[in-house]
Length: 152
Ligand code: TYD
Image (cartoon, protein in one colour):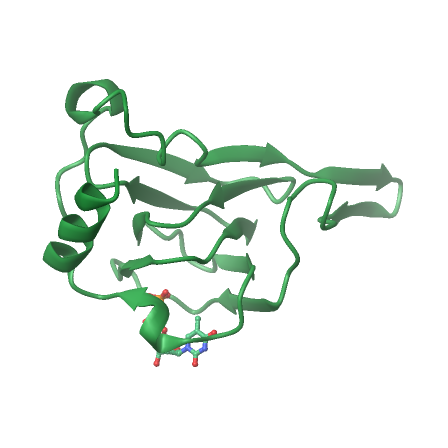
């Protein structure tokens, strides 16, 4: 994984793809029976969810991600436990801690991401704007960087 730097150090002010990556407050309904948290298209997120998946049983020290997407948008929620997501638009990087099931990280297109520091027992949920298409991924950071910088 590449070194994490602050947004302002490496960031080019004309490149805005990293700033839409942000924590989104979800709607939590709490009562004496516990909590129910909702994500609804058109409310907490501005895309239609075409796919959901979750990651669990992550071994100690394992890192996931290491890819980018051309078009896809997503909301990432640590429904149990915690992990960090490093987002990178080819100019700047930011690291987000996901440790609260009532908040999600929105990640837009043309962002490279790494998921690190999974606490034991963590379950992460991904709500995604597209069905699965392996050709829509960047798996090579140099290729991502070339494209990310050429379309800035
Ligand atoms: P991978 O992209 O490596 O996971 P991560 O984003 O956590 O690093 O995906 C792991 C495997 O799962 C890989 O073989 C592709 C497959 N996969 C699907 O078949 N459908 C999906 O929707 C996703 C996200 C992955």
